[in-house]
Image (cartoon, rainbow, N blue to C red):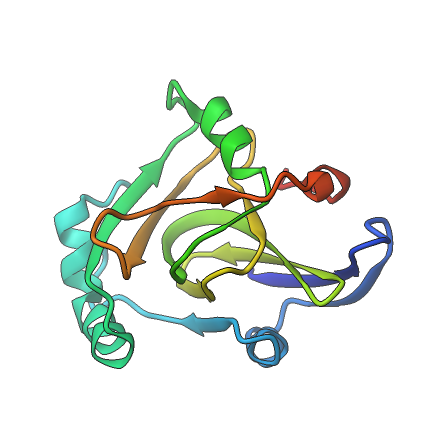
Length: 180
């Protein structure tokens, strides 16, 4: 189940606010300019969905985002516990960074933890199946896929070259809880 935990950026041991209610999560994130939605596929995708089937199942929702925000490209990424570079990729994403474009992810299956550093707060969003998150451009954040990652996600981009990160050098991510 999706979850949002908000911390002071100086108190990683003491949550200020927590919820697993999708509507409450949406409202809290909306206040800081973060889009959070729940999408539904128009067909069953099975346990190991192929990229073409994933795109076809969600094309209607992707088209809506493209029309609204002018995104230029999208793809599907899948990560499994047996991926040979899982630990190196996890470490890379665990460093606080920003992007010059929105970071838009929709979780088709599995889970991941987005952590946003905004207004002296850290917003930890556990995204699971059917969750869409759009982190605005230039928002300091990090992502934890866990030690045994398992997810399939649609990535939507402004930039046809895809994911380009600018690392902040701030060690804050190491102070906060990680995905089990």
